[in-house]
Length: 469
Image 1 (cartoon, rainbow, N blue to C red):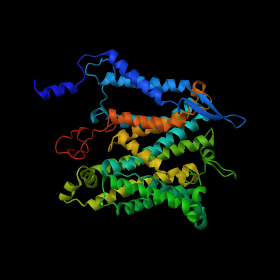
Image 2: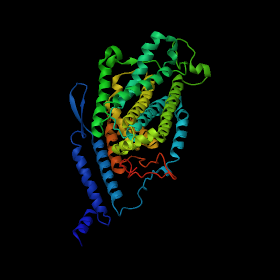
Image 3: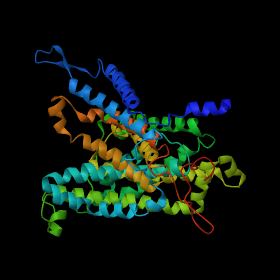
Image 4: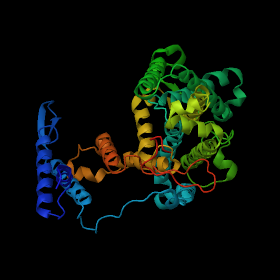
């Protein structure tokens, strides 16, 4: 037997499955987790009514975390062992031919979601589910699809995408709040529809401005420059008080149904009055907002799919795979990069204008780096270049964060001061680590070629972004 054979055999786990060894390893991991829980997790500092600092133990929280570590390690060893029991979950196959129906099913569910939420929760709970879940998730889906053009198709790592989101939001805020009332006040109810294309154009312009300095950069250097650009925009919004009102923000007019307001304090004719709709005006407004952002998100999805099949889309993919080979084929990499930044930024600007009209208020705190990191994480988790994968990841990430705020029953287990929302970034980071181990190329990494000779065969996830696709 050769040394190479011995080395290979030594690198493999034993052929027989040992439950005792698996439980021992899981117990050791749980013991380490128990040690790491002291003292930060095991104890909490509180102030009593006398303003004295007290320490309270949290044994149930420690027990839950240790149990999660034990179960996670145990399941991991079971799934990775060559002689594992076959009663575990089947292998997840998200190849294109298995996901062909996902867009149609997802679109059908999206179309009926507001009315389903209204039927299940009634007038009182519908606003929360439609607005906090439906509208919020669709905003991030639209942002992630816009960033997917830059990162997923063109392969340009952008850590400052939230800057274009901010440009669109402040474009609507300034024009709708100051410019239109001072020049053409009769157009006030139509402010959103007037500002929406302007916000997209200005965001695309700033995308081109960002693209010029980074034409020769790639990888980590490109990421650092785009990160700096996002921070520059945020600091300008904070410090240019005369123009943006700084941290105090700007109150913006709410969106209307093509001139018809949803609520009125002066006795104006509202949307509900014209169409004689029963129910609360807040529900009408939430449903309208939902379908507006759904339409904008679908516009981004259709545009992305069409652009990918055009010559510019194939140029993006060639640039992502190998920039040197792309140049040798005569492709203008300058125009290719600028169009990717501009189109991705335009979609971010449209989402920003909608965000500003929906909130009725905008300030720089809504456009911090964490927003860019969240959007980029959604693109990576879903699978770069995949429309369906990015949408699924956005639903899981943003919907999961919103669901944490609804877990009030956990306060009866871990105490009245326990807030599940405080652990959203911990759970989010853990989910990213697990995804990078389980599916490092995202939920849907395999992709169909944008052009083919006879038969369009899906490109394996093992070859995507490695110069073989």
